[in-house]
Image 1: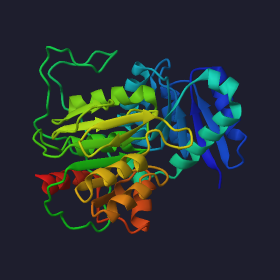
Image 2: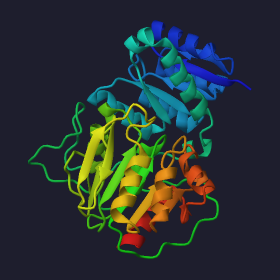
Image 3: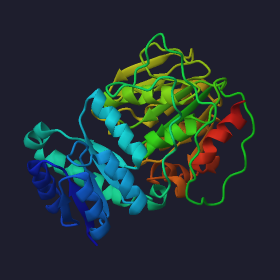
Length: 374
């Protein structure tokens, strides 16, 4: 059965081009188009598409507002189009918080210059998010704790003189009923917590990290499949919401307790036995930049059995081979359960390879990290 898609964009050119690209795939059917957020809501209710592609800037109602209404009235996987700028990253992260599943850069030059590549990527994204876990869309996103000073619309950066705002109570969101869970973990003196994720990861990481106290004793590294223009804005966003500190990793950064370092988009991140971060150019031979396998593998070499690795929601199997190396060295591997995943791909690869020491729902992972490490 063909995947039914609703295309939403105020640009006639972009609506037509996206519709043409998708319609060229015999397993995709464009069932309608909309020119603004209000029309998108009406069409989503009437047409019941499997996937919606959504622009942000539109008249009458913007894309983020439309996503919020759609998730309340007829939860549907949404693929956002965004610009590769800091502001575009900020808007995209807001859209993911509102309930969008994934995003693609909106680049007219790429459509003209690399039509086949654009077609392949867009169709792959549509197919993948059509298989996303709709139950995970029914829950409203966690409310963001209010910072001391409201961020400006153009940046998430915090003035140097402003105090660091840390929420007193971590936000909690009820997820879909989970399958049988693993028992609570036993405490161990881990030297590193490494978390890898992809589709659905920005919201998942927020929900995990906001549960950690400021005195969390282990250093943390985060590997999220994300473009280069997005990771700095994402790290800044997490830093505002969490009681631990979060920053985009730089070459030479040193691991320390209570600090999470996010792998920069378009590059690879490794850790060494001295606790130093190495940032390497993205290898064109690798599908993912950053790649979970690369970081997990370096952690296995540097820290032996003292790593706690967590694999969250995402497409594909990135992280499986790195987890295998960690497991061989005696480290612990956790996987997110299927019921709470947006895309049960990466965690499923861990479970099917018999590498998972524990399987937990998303809302339990942060709590169990505290139990395991404090």
